[in-house]
Length: 181
Image (cartoon, rainbow, N blue to C red; front, side, top):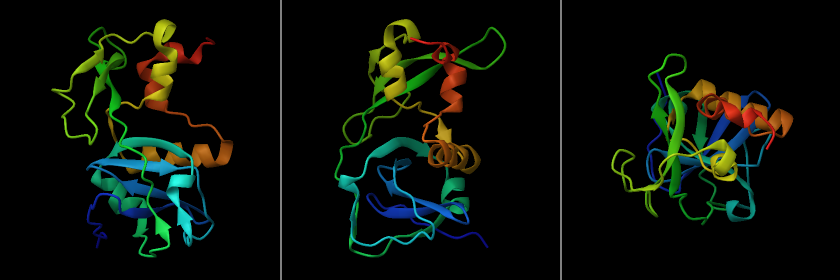
């Protein structure tokens, strides 16, 4: 039977990436979750304020992440969620109809301070991002895609194993990212 994790804003969960590698996710406005540059060999934390830990990224997650990657909620009151604001800016990929990968390029959108604006109706901040002009913006903000447990687990393991946050989907949406600035 699959475990049931109930979403509650600012609750903290432990993600099991391997038998000896755990990290923390903070539930934000559903379905956004923020991840941090923190790891543990056993998934146990005490006396920790996530406001003092570097955030890695904030992404939208599917229920499969809760079912397959989340090990448990953190109940220890000495572990505090971050008070960092919700990341309001996101990159919505453009549909690409010329064959190949279905998304190419994107636009910067504003989901509001609490993430209450849907991606389909969000105001556009910049309509056509270009790696040549907007590399820093593209590297800074996350795509609006929904992450599953396999891709998210792979991204987090890659970060903790190699020290590099590599978003393989963003590399496909913006293939020019691989080229030097």
